Image (cartoon, rainbow, N blue to C red; front, side, top):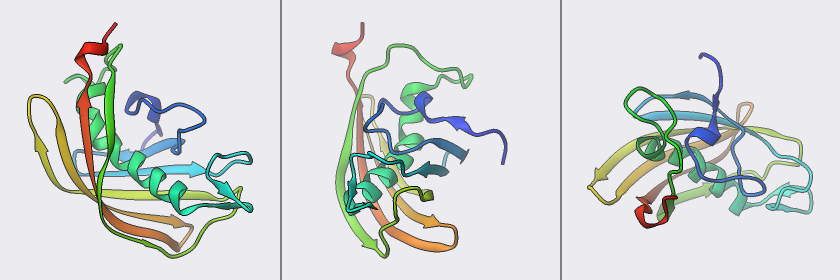
Amino acid sequence: MGIPIDINNFLPHRAPMLMVDWILEMNDERVESVFTIGEGNVFLQNELFSESGLIENAAQTCSAIVGKQYFVDENNEAKQDVKIIGFISAIKTMNIHVLPKVGTTINTIATLTSKFVSEDYSISTMYCKTYSKDELLLDGEINLFIQERKDEKE
């Protein structure tokens, strides 16, 4: 692993909806992220990071691979003023094993299992696992849809 990659180069999300702190490793088929669950997080319920928070963290981690084509040019330089819309188009399988407590640092590893890219949008299937140290918190497979909003460029 090299230097952590700034997630802001690959996702449009910003606080308070950003659920990834850093990308630890990324290539065209695999991404690993880290996130520390802070006090006041919008997905906290009774001092636990909710199921929705775990799923959002996994989706944002997965989106780094899918979003890369929109946010980074062929020279790995950040593109400016890119507007995209993206969402989870399907949760194929999802198992929540443990809800982590506030203050916990989680690592999410996502692997691309399939990808369709057209001129207008991309749809990807990703398999992801989220851990706190060696404890498995989440595993599952999701589909993501991402499209550049060309009408919203400034």
